[in-house]
Amino acid sequence: MNRIFNRNYTLVPLLLGILLLSASTALAQKTEKINANARGTSTQLGKVISVDFWIREYSDQEERAALLEAFTEKGSQGLVNALDKMKSKGRIAITGTLGFDVNFIRSVNLPDGSRMIRFVTDRPITFAENWASSRSADYQVSMGEIILRKEKGKSTGKLFPAAKVKLNKDNEIEIETFQNPWDLTNIRFSN
Image (tube, rainbow, N blue to C red; front, side, top):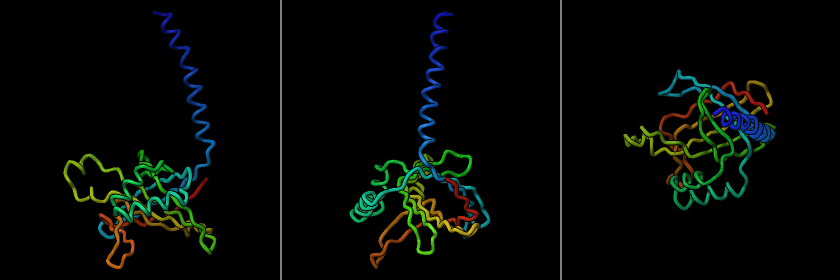
C-alpha cells in the first residue's frame, strides 16, 4: 500500500510541471483585457454590472468574409452556425463568472487616433430558455462595440447581450435585440 502511494506521489510533481509549462505558454501570448461597467437602458435602467473582456487574437479578413457569406445565404441562423465553427478569439464575462467564448473580434483604427473593437459570438442558450421555449432563445447572438479613445475616461461602447441580425426592407443590416442594448462606461484597457 505504501509503495503505491509513493509511486502516485512522485507523479504529482511531474503533473504540476506540465501544468505550469502549459500555463506559462498561455501567458506568453499577449492578451488584452478590457473592463467596463455595463449600464442598462430603458427597461433595464438603473442596473449596472461589471464586464470583463479578454482578447487573445483578432479575426482576419477570411473569417469576416465567411461570416458575411453565411449571413447572406442563411440569415441570422447562418451567422450563428458559422460563428459556432470558429475558434475562440477571446472571452467575455460578467465579473466573477466564467462567461463564454467570443469567436469573432475585429479592431479598426479610426481617423482621430481612437481604436474601435467590434465583436460577435454565438450566445450560449441556457437550459431554462430552451426548456421553456422562451422568445429569448431566438436571439442567438451576443455582440458589441468598444471605442478606445486616447483621452482617459472618454472611451465608450455598446453591448447587445441577446440579438439577432437581419436585413431590413432596404437591404441594410439591422440588429434586433431581445431587450435593450447596454451602454459601456468606465472602460479600462490593459495589455
